[in-house]
Length: 85
Image (cartoon, rainbow, N blue to C red; front, top):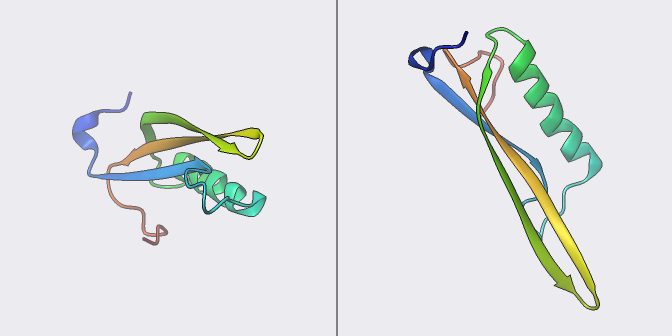
């Protein structure tokens, strides 16, 4: 069981496009997913504290475009050495 009293560092990782002026490429999405997977599996192992789910509906000409993203809050007992801010 993960105790919130042990959390000293929280990393917010956004997976998906949250800015309509800067659409993310598949490589950018893969990097965010890889970072999330590393946070949850590498040492020190993090735990998901919360998830933000959000979306935006854009009208582009005749078309509606839906941007969706998830922001994961991953908590650690200490900041991982491998994490570069």
